[in-house]
Length: 214
Image (cartoon, rainbow, N blue to C red; front, side):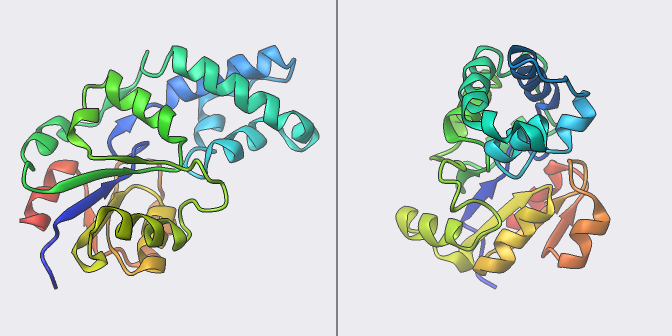
C-alpha cells in the first residue's frame, strides 16, 4: 500500500464531543417553534447524517413544514454558542501537532461554517487546509461523490488518503470511494454497525493514529 499523505477527519465523535451544544441549539429552536423539546441523548442520536436530517428528526414527522425555518434558526443559535460545553477528545491536540508533514482536512456532514466555528473555538482550525462540509445535501457522506469531488480538487491520490471517523457512514464513504478508513471506537458509532463494514484500521484512542500513518 502507498504511504498515507492526506488525512480526512470527521468532527463530531472523532475530534470533539459537541453533543451538548448541538442539543442546546436544537432545543432552543424547538422552544421557538413551540415544539416539544428532546433530551440531549435523543438529539445526539440524530448527529452525523447532516444538519437538515438532524432538524427533520428533531421536529418529527408532523413538523416537516418547519424544516427550512428551523434550519435558519438553528444555524443562528448554534453560531452563538458553538463550544460552550464542547471538548476535544484526549490526545487530539497532540496528534495534530505531531503531524506537520501530513496534509489534514475536515470531512463532516455538518455545514462547513458550523464546523469551522467549533474548530476555531477549540483552537484547532489552524491545523486543517480546508473544511469540507455537508453544504450540498445531495452529496454528503457516505456517497462516493464526496471524495470524487474533493480528491481532484486538493490533488490527493485516493490511494494515499485516509478517512478517520467514528460512525458507519465514515467507513462507508471510504468503501464507496476506494479510500482507506480508520474507525475510532470512542465516538458515536456502535461496533455492531461499523465492524461488519471492515474498516482498514480500528483504534481506541486518537493517539494510536500515529503508528498507522508513519
